[in-house]
Length: 195
Image (cartoon, rainbow, N blue to C red; front, side, top):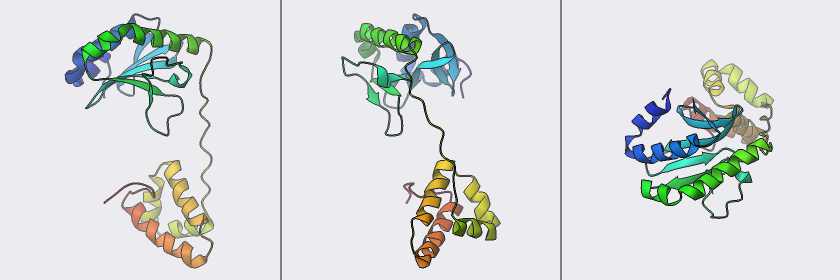
């Protein structure tokens, strides 16, 4: 994991020029450059505003509260269905960034202004995982299974718990317990795609 922006750019040499250009745009604003999660992050008063990243097929600039940007040029995309506020712009070349440089700067300035105005999505804390009695007893009988279960995130644990709770009949609960036991021991979440 990179500890400096230079290290990050060096580890993404195929996007060297593009990352330098996006970095320049961010550093010419009032944002503070930091490294978070091993990548360049630009903050205002300690709040994340922008990140830049290089991936296999594109280089991107991320707006942490991008959902509030007006996006008149329709350049923003939602990363995935789970991100609430995060929006990104993707580029395939330095020329593309240079061509849109003034537009990118507009978005950066708007993101800064939005942060100053306190526009941000409040992420609610995940609800507590409540395990059904059948699952608790099943885990208590098998220490290896319990240890494997505890390695899952609370969200994945909740999926397993809900799967058992949703079964109405004891026979269905038993079948489901057997099915998820194998998945848990293999480190596979209930809704993970696997072969």
